[in-house]
Length: 558
Ligand code: GLC
Ligand code: CA
Image (cartoon, rainbow, N blue to C red; front, side, top):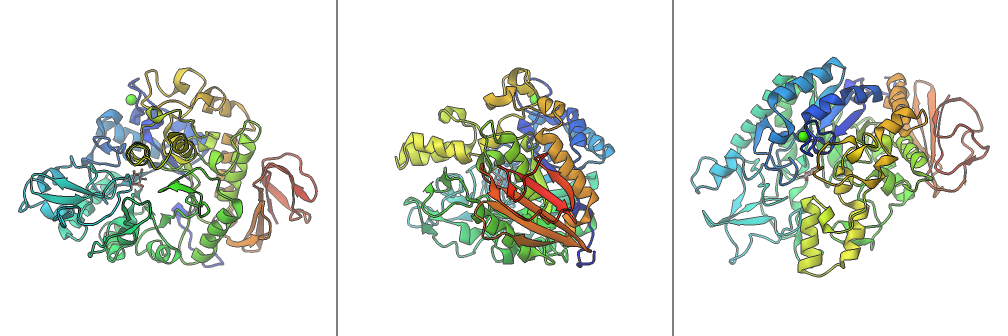
């Protein structure tokens, strides 16, 4: 490309994330499975996505819905068998859809054979596969709080030592300093690559190298210390990823994306550098964690609405600073986030469809690789949680126990408001396929409640309505495939004084794309379109001179 960008298939692709447990249940046990995915591949083909990122399907006791793996080379019993997996892979490939696996190697399940061995004795050959420490003054080695509340250290009676778990106590952290761990992980990755998969989404990969001093963290909520400065982007993380790249990734043609909690622009330039020494791209979290100071209730919990100018400042910074140096991933939603239309848009009946399309436009016209999370393409919304019994996610349950029950720091109603706003279960309610019982997700009882709005918001309705969110996404995907300026064009912010309109231009080889999105339910002044040009897409059929209508999005090519 004339601006120095090199063409690569995964830069031109649109990714669709499947959370298998909640996607489609083929055998009536209430749990989504591989058979359900196979049944709906034609739907994804119709949408036009190039790649599926599959959240974990490996053998797991499901403490964290598969992010706790007990066997990396086997399939979760509830999801099916390795034969089902192979069938799904072949079927997807025959439709031109690639499959990217979730790679969860910061930790394993405590039921993984390595950990079962490791905890047996101090001289077990697998002892150093994990991070074991002695008690300090009869207590935990330091004050770190795990990402899922409580201490990040678990006492293990058998050998009288603590092990580190940055997530649940059933997710012990692997010791990446041990070369045997790296060998084992790289061998396992090679095995999947040989099977023919097309890439990896790497779970919390920024956390694999810990500060060897294990210092206490800053105490923010009055109970535990913040471990993030000592576990994110640690001293050897780039070394390990370069080794992984040399030994595995560079031998195949893969899409790689690192989930990088706590990543800064400077770090991202290393992880996702265009020279290809580490990964293809990273997920950063600044725009999803974007609330003002004082809006947090406790820990990560809040029910504040992110403000457009703040979100824009973050996303523009990532666009501008990675230009020509590293590659962005673009997302609003995933299985750890609430529903985008509820969080950033407006899920009131009147505005849901318009604002879902506006958000999609705003993101899909940027430089980077876009990710769509299941249900986003039909404008699925957040859930309403009436009590802790509605929740399934251990992050919510543990936070409830710590802050509401044990420490009485937050009123139950206040915590439920936080759950309604940002709980991960918002994204994990079953995919809404049609208006039949349980939204067509299962013939049995779903493992987590279906959102009651499924009679109206479902894929069947979307497919029957030419103006649906679904067909709008389909069009965005087609436009990206047909117009290199959308993939590779340089980015220029516009209207930075506006509090309501997110606008920018993209430019490549003499073509200029102008994008403007009204983030409010009121008409707003905007004179970017007075010069004319070819309209590529808009969520309104008629426009008004000099303004954008409520949640209007417009894209013009000249
Ligand atoms: C990542 C996953 C999340 C999981 C955690 C621990 O953040 O996306 O779902 O709970 O890592 O594996
Ligand atoms: Ca099932």
